[in-house]
Length: 226
Ligand SMILES: *Cc1c(COP(=O)(O)O)cnc(C)c1O
Image (cartoon, rainbow, N blue to C red; front, top):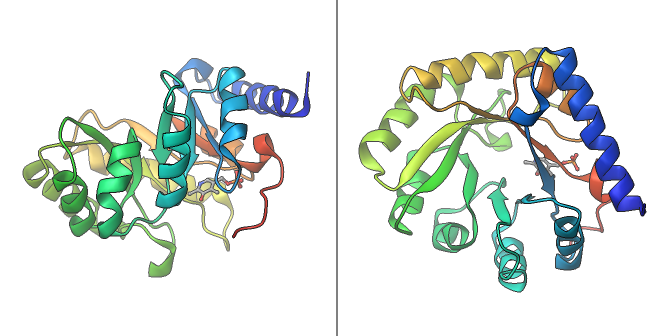
């Protein structure tokens, strides 16, 4: 097995262990491989290893890679980065899910940018720092109501968050599980919880995450950010 295949298998085994330890079925968890800053050829290699869900955080990179790999049937691109409204059309054209909807204006821009149905998650800020992105927890229901009543082409699937830097991940992800419950008072079938990266995916699984966004543990070191 080459290194990439070995790292993927190791991570998947750790996800399965964490799921069983939490009394959960590993098959209910989607592992998204975050491929940002890596070339499209790495995504193609992952695809050959069976990966069908990949994550990108910058629109231009997403657009370029999705175009280059357009012939890989069933490959799903998850947009996980902070999004500018003027990029909404390009994001929507390439992504099957946008995890980072955190304000009404962005929801509106994505809604107007396409037809059919787009899966979206509401990104929640688990810190007090607005620069980290995400809707403040107290505004979750209002944002969900806005999308449900005003954004016909968006389907809210759940919540997304990044763990704070200055606090252990486990209690933060427990709060996120509570926010997911609050979202379900507005959208009863919104049962996705996107949480957990290389450093904290075990804690995320324990707290009920359904979608893990794992980069470097699988891809290796990211090339420098250009
Ligand atoms: C880069 C990134 C990840 C993956 O990070 P790793 O630590 O490499 O696993 C997950 N989520 C978001 C939003 C990211 O930007």
